Length: 168
Image (tube, rainbow, N blue to C red; front, side):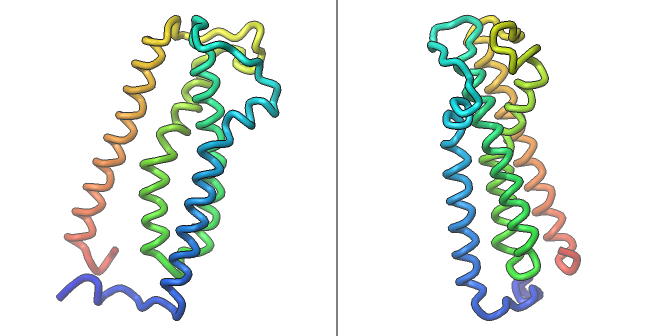
């Protein structure tokens, strides 16, 4: 017996609602992904060149991109929570996409804020990464670490659902 037959039936219009929810996800993700530079200029962040050491251009860009993605995550979690009871499979897909595409950049943004002293005082800000190579190494380790942890979590949840289909 398939586990699909144990799921509760979708209310009428479930596929239409699933399409609407995915459109909301894509819109919020797109806006969040590309609004970082606009937020930075709105807050008056000084323009820097790519060749500066420490690599403030990349650090600040990654910070504001991650901040916008964190805000987008909050919007999507709120909409997903409201739609959970009607369309669990679509909202579950949202959660996977949020963890894979948005959470790593949000964690990078939080890490940047916590590791850089006086981050918003642009004349006296100090960061622990003296070169772009040092910052890039940390960024890659952090992003791949979060993705690896997410993959492990998804694998564990998948195995748990297979062993306990009536609880999932």
